Image (cartoon, rainbow, N blue to C red; front, side, top):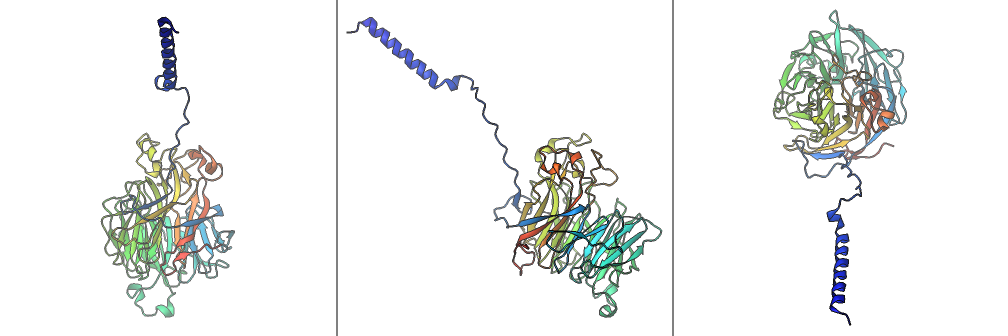
Length: 498
């Protein structure tokens, strides 16, 4: 039998053991945990978006778009791209016309001795009606050499075009379009003495924008001159020429308020139209672009003051435009440049651009010590730009839906992109390596082709900490739609080419 003293000792011992067990069980609550938790991973940056006219997400199913990449094998800043009805791709940049007739598996130089000139400002165009391929080369400041081929680049002919005593500054452009029933087309002899298509050639001089019309397929340009609406602060710098099925011609001047210059009579007369004053454009800036669909509706695209891609529409052949802009790029893309666009049937459009989602960098200072606002010209060193494509199949609707893919797996440029040729950065080499534009066009099936210069290749593309000085390439590159909806509704979904 236990005595009271023994019982008391046993009770005390049991209490002590229980207290110790309680302390051990809850020791994590009272002591510092020396076990280090693994760092939390940041959520991956999204690469696809479905957005409305304000750039914000909408509850719609993403279009299935798949793209195939092709390395052209040559440097190719400021590229032009086009596809003939035979399926041959033409990538024109610097002094070479690169051709691929096997869907980008291989490329060859098809320039020929007639058109192989050293130039700093080339331009290429494939006429979607006649398949005539144009290669325009600027020689010096007063003469351009315009070459063309009617046999998929097997042979070329060409003539010089003398701009006169006032020098050409920059931005030589050429395009084709149908003859109209007014202006230069009213002679009633189009089918007898005129080439099937009107050929337009524009460039800027110190005085402004000059545009000419050729009646003989681009052999001569004797009609034209200074066009109306040239009042810019950039000496007449302008973007590409676009012609609609009804013959309306569009040229985009580089101005602060989004504008287009329009001709309804094959370049005999011109008028200017403004739009999108609600968002304006940044400064420095590059040119905007117009696309027209099969019913001659027009879509004007530009980089807005908040660095997003915006659109205004015209359904009356460019006579009037929406003054309230539609945001095409997702709001998550906070910096964008080089919008290029094409259209198929009404409302079916595709636009490509370089963009950045480095939103955390908006609080950083640019190279001048000012807070960065998303302008690519002043981007900080750790901002990365990728190639994006935005599709819409209902771009004429009141509330269009936009489907955006980040197409490139690695950056196209690290750091800033020069948007003003007179004020570029020199960080391990000038950041003007990409020059002024990329290009996008569709073929006869409504398949999208994108030509661009890749500024981040090799170790820059594969490295984990690439810097702007690593991103000074200008590799000619192509993406094309391998499968997905055609921009021509009747064709439906496109199948892979290979």
